[in-house]
Length: 410
Image (cartoon, rainbow, N blue to C red):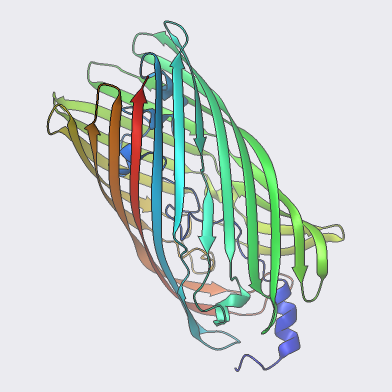
């Protein structure tokens, strides 16, 4: 059907096509829309061992990792995200067409600091971006643009922590999450116009963890990050409704991470991680207005799972090499749950990394990951109450990640 036909019908449908807001790091560098690359060190091992210490970035997954090192320590990581995702609409009321690359190149960073204030007591601070998204199709006129054009989410999370060594080999930690989010959503309102929602919000949560060293050379870490909900307060503008004050609700998951760090030889460590993310909280993305409930898009995601194994090898007294592989089970297991902003599916991570001790107090880190994302399908309708569709088709995606970092002992 030509895009100029039934103009009024699709103008109405487009005004209620509220897709998922804030989904993925660029084109989803992790399942759902969380960001795994919180430390250059652990990106090099595909997040294997991430909650069991070894670098200060382990604090993101396990608050007890605040207590790893004596004195004052810091770590910073900077990651370039190069995503690719293509949506090929093979059937819809508006015909067929492809999005071109929906991924937007982006950067993300994280910083950590910890200070030993007593023999068994440490305090710390982590500044990270746990969730994020930046997607826009190269072809903004393809049929799927009625489901979504530009989608962006930025989160900034401050996580003060405290850790206490309650006995030799047993350390516990806890912290508070203070998170600010900014979201922006654009989608086609008619063949000639774009609708938009934008808003901001603060949310609060907690972190907790425990680190166990049952024998010399064995470290087990278990960490928890609590669920949070962002009610993004902003405005929605469309051809049909004009400009309305609106609130867009995004439910974020609990995350539990279990990791192992095992010394095999004086120069070799074996690493492993299993992680559960409570993405079943993400039932839908809804918009509310002063006049009652607004448009809503069903998601009905499942929980997500992430498994990784890796290793570290001290090539010399100054150079450490690491690598890892991971398999991630996406919370999206059906074509009706795969939104056009998120060409997400089960994925495989291949990662390599290295650390070089520049001086007694400074260590430099680098890592690279390639993420293979399984092809999938879509079978979607515009948001209720319009429910125009179905829009059916196929998606393909992949991600490249490059990261550098620095660790300092002051």
